[in-house]
Amino acid sequence: MKSIHKEIYYALPTVMKNLAVSSSLLVQRKTRYGKFYNQYLKFYSQNLSKSKDELDVIQLSTLKNILLEVSDNTEYFNGIFNNKGITKELINSASSVTELISKLPIFQKDFLKKYKQEIDNLSRRRTYLSSTSGTTGTPNVISYDDESLQIGFALLRRFYDTIGLPKEFKSVRLSGKIVVLPSKNKPPFWIHNYSSKQLFMSVYHLTEKNIKAYIKKFNEYKPQLIDGYPSAIFVIAQYINKHKIKLQFKPIAIATTAETLYGCYKAEIEKAFGCKVYNQYSSSEGGPFIAECTHGKLHLQTDSGIFEFINALGKPAIAGEFAELVVTSFRQWKTPLIRYSTGDWVKISDKSFTYQSCDCGCNMPVIDEIIGREDDILFTLEKGHVGRLDPAYKGLIGIKKSKIIQHQIDFIEVVNIVDENYSEKVEHRLLKNLRDRLGEKINIEIKIVNEIPLGASGKFKAVERKFNLS
Ligand SMILES: [Zn+2]
Image (cartoon, rainbow, N blue to C red; front, side, top):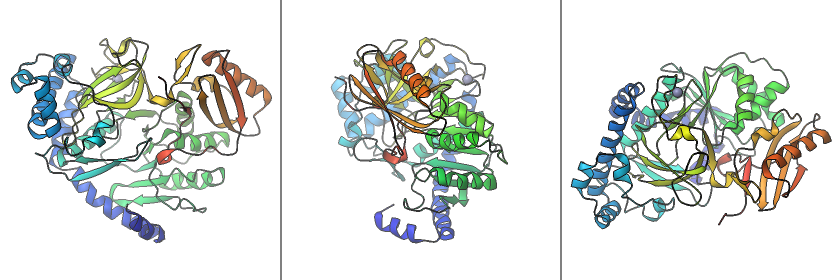
């Protein structure tokens, strides 16, 4: 929203706000669910039961199609392909994805902004613009054509099908969308989108005082799906569990995205809402999908793109390493993402490289963990890279919210918001648990605070490294 529109929107009474949001989203709905959506949903649904070989064939042919199209219609890739001697004949005759893709350079994250005009696929009409939040620097605006936009919604619908959601359902979304004035101190802290039976709830008003009103609204609205930031859903779940509140509804599923889903978040949310939590990932620029199946596996959806893993030294990662995801997207044809460094990190294991079938019936490869941004990984001289630290909190009571900040290679600060159950004993156990993972030599300082501010787009970073690793 432009700032003048924002001002008008905030000044509207709630009923009018609901109508304003619903009508603008009704227009968007028409561009999301058109002929391409139906066509792709059918195609994607069939792929879930395809064999590895069949999926490999789809991946190679889609890669060829996208490379041929960008070579003809984008100034930037045309130049790169000419430079590298990548001709149409070479693309057409390639017999494997690795053979073809390895001929191209890896593009760093900033290239999207730098070459905005030059990478634009001129053969496709821009029908939608999406702003990415950009945790660092200014937000970026990404162009989509109808087909690219609808492919994304078809992939999302396939995910919903796999987790058992009906064709139409009521949902609550907790994400960075600013739906009510940040200074508002009385409910409603939400806005209805009647066009999609959706309720947008603010993540900026989840204070102890307000959570009761959120829960009351949940009970009235009875969503079948809750989706959005895991940190926000966790705060509500923790309150429900602590006060032993019995909800008057049970969602079919909870789907989290855009932030790291820690094991402790997942357990607390599943306990509170009595349903399963599924993790879903896709970079905001229109990257391929990673989605959790009903058997708890994170599948790389290889019909939506190609995933490569690059370690901290810029080399192809091996099992057990942390790696940056480099993607080639089959769902973004207007702003092509080819060997694009997402800035998102994952932990890989043997399972990511060797083929293993999953009991859910899907033959797409799986990955161990999605970590988040590069600065979500700490580094100490004793232990090297240290990813998920949530196990350090296991079984500890009295800590409502916590953040681990590494200021320097030898100094870590932990800030906790606590309740009456917190004690010195808990603090000692936390310190010991952290030492087990971060080493004996590092200086760890634990502090109690009243507030931990949210970061960009209302996201909460539970772990943050404040310096660059060289
Ligand atoms: Zn599976």
